[in-house]
Image 1 (cartoon, rainbow, N blue to C red):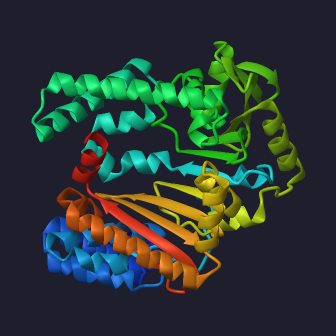
Image 2 (image 1 turned 180 degrees about the vertical axis):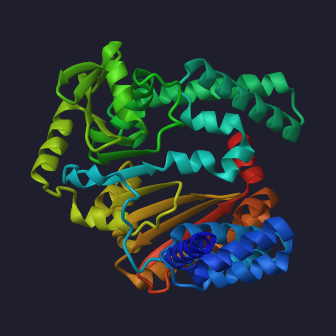
Length: 451
């Protein structure tokens, strides 16, 4: 009996081992690199394994992104930051043999065809990132709190810290500098309001897309005082009219939250699976909240919600296909990403310029086919921008001009040199895109925010 039991146990163990997927070379290099870096504290060993990971072709983009940021930090530690620049250019190539799937909500495919800008935030990934933990609760709450008093405290703290650093740097009285900061902010806000009243062309002078107005009201309706517990938030809109916008949110245990909110009157049902948020209006209309897939809600103006639900019911993939292709080329494993189509990028970037200036710039610059911006958080923060273009010659000329400007600024300003050290501007390997990459440490982020 005992022998039979032992034999059965051994067979079960062998079966479990054989069923376990084999570790790929990329996974092995990443595991060994992390072990060398964090456990053994052997820099050369870690660099060797992470460099081997960068040379692998893999669809594990999360490993590639994490390994890249770690390798850049290691290069800095051994005094060879220039080694990181060729590495930065590989971000868009690494693991790009397959298009990304599942890094945006499923219902994104049903947004109206005029939508051409997306802002996607993997909240869970951002909250759990080592960099976020290192920056502390203030940094996390700056982006995710819905507590107005907490937000005001954070704004006051940033203003005070910025004024203190400026006063020390310029050898001036702190109170005078703080007063100037307050007055400068008041003046800037007053100017913005004037431009908005005149119908300014800048996107900052318009009413923002609905996700900028509705995220905290939705959180409060669901009984939350911040959005850090959400899995993902995705805002999509039409650049020509921000009111044509929607927000898709993925939340764990959503059905329980919706039922409780409706029972307590924090959501008002207008039809089955659809509610409004009492007291919240956007573009002079009620904001609708509609349950879609399990754990997914759609938030937006009634007509936009109608369009998405109708397309979803027909299983009609209404999203603009060129826009969708740009989204699918963003690697997985990002903390957030932003994608704009060619038209959106051109109008939002050059729309506030005089027609003659805009025409001149459009003539000399390569025509963009869109823009992709990806933010990756590890122990450091990496920002990777890709602009597909139609003219390699103009693209190469633009890269040379930008590099010259960076070198000129770095030579004149020691503080700028420190921040620009890991900024890299280059052509993609196939010369079909312009790339700009930037990596910041926690200390550099602190300087950018408060200086």
